[in-house]
Image 1 (cartoon, rainbow, N blue to C red):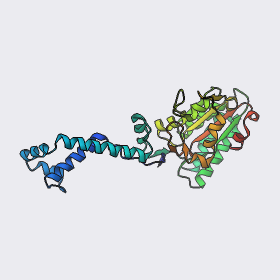
Image 2 (cartoon, one colour):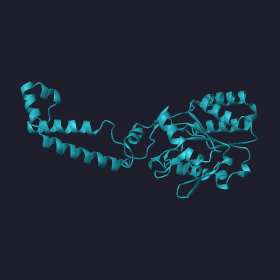
Image 3 (cartoon, one colour):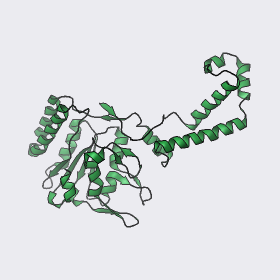
Image 4 (cartoon, one colour):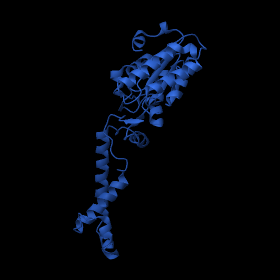
Length: 293
């Protein structure tokens, strides 16, 4: 799998903790006061225990206090520069873990695309039109030289019980990517997908960002089941937020490239996510949502 940048902000090295920086600054201060700048710590140790002990005595309580204040100021400025300053420590650590990017699943050859389509069709031949759409999209992705698998949003419409959600899960299985299923009949489905802003009664990240943070894969299969039956979530202040409003920025390629998470308030690259929406009656879907699929 290729690796792509995922978080659109500056991330500082994980090892730059307060303890690490304090030790670094104190060691540098010892070297400065002993005119040993430019020599390694190993060379300092070779000078002998007595000399090393004198280095320790040169760091006073006032020195430590000044270094600690400087380190805290530096960390605060780094957090402000990264856009993580408003996050809690565990939230910052969760995002910083993705500093090296996330993996991007790919179909390597047209033969592999043929095999995936054939396996899907063999299990569920009545879903042939959907399988053919995916097959053509996989081949197109390869011919365009895409670094990873990119599939357009798919709407599976039909009566209950024909296996729409099962087909979507099998697609994720054959593509070897994580699959998350979200029931749109849940009144808070919009929050379930994208999360909710801080200050709401139950603020938290959505299933989409949580899936990618946990799996470290940029193009999981996200299944929204019975999308036409979605309700509208309402905030404590009375503000309404429907599923269509949550999905549109993620289904539109341009806005998905720089999607702002309501909870983390940081921008992420969501343009690789594979969306599969199911419905029993597509005519009940909002027109803007239909146009985006």
